Length: 425
Ligand code: ADP
Ligand code: ASP
Ligand code: MG
Image (cartoon, rainbow, N blue to C red; front, top):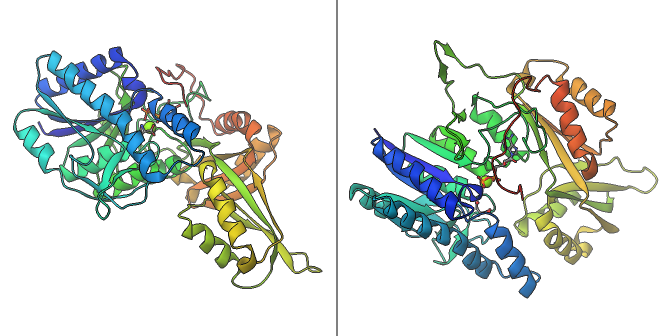
């Protein structure tokens, strides 16, 4: 029996009852002969509440202090969980991210893990303990300040520790029974996926399926760590995310042609109006955005009106970065040269993901037909080899996801997808 890393999300440890339930689960794994490292998130919506609190004292809280504040959420759950496990007669020790050896760069609020040195975790395990680690946090190699990994970052902590400790598997426990063909909160008829390849999971995660964080899947693929996404509220098998197909009885599970539909309403659109149509313009716009440490998603440049020689460039980015991007562009207005900026945060993105797209003609046509049948207007389009995404009005997203899910035959004809907890916030 090897080492397992288990990660419990906020909804799984939302209250004292939840913590006790999770403690029992962890003890079960230990009794089955595993060495167990449990990574925990902050209880329930604690992180959101702390952010709200910070914004009440300062509209744009300082990154360093915000990280200091937010990491407190995970500390509360790790200590309570260790206490609950001790109460069941087993020894457990809790560790902050820094103590667990999670070393990051120094970009506050969205730091990247650059190394994991889990010496103290190994010692704790070798001493017969269950090790509990606060997710979502680390320490900067350069500044020695405490950092956080961005929203949902506990998933990445878990996979990074699993890689550093050479774990057999990384189990991600959450409030649904696995990865579904769409968000079960939106599509009741979503179907649970038994096995999905890293490649498709990466695209789903990048397109807004927050059941797994994109960076965590990236990490798992790089180190080839199989992930098992499952519910902490049921005993059911969940979804395996790995390179190699899993066995079901005699058969290997096959990869579906279409893996699922993802949606995302966390982005906004900026349009730079009246950009001179000459080389170097896009470069200076996106250099400005990059220098502000902002990641963008889709980009569209309109054809220029011949008479004016001016064009418009639109791009999407996280709403949380909207203010910063507008400020950076305004500051550089003279250098870049444009007329005005337009900001629109009432957009949504719908994506269809599946490796089978590469070899099945007509997927794009069927996707657009489903959207038009549902009366949904498309504003931007982007594609990769295995994904098609469109931007629509935010109000149209639910309708669009359901329509596309049905059109591609993904609706389950048996049980309804269960959501066990959480507020979906
Ligand atoms: P945790 O607190 O455990 O990290 P999250 O809220 O981050 O949980 O992620 C779980 C949620 O992800 C589910 O409750 C569900 O609403 C949402 N979700 C979005 N897309 C999917 C999908 N394709 N499959 C399963 N869940 C999804
Ligand atoms: N507590 C953090 C968040 O809510 C990290 C996590 O849950 O993964 O984003
Ligand atoms: Mg999460």
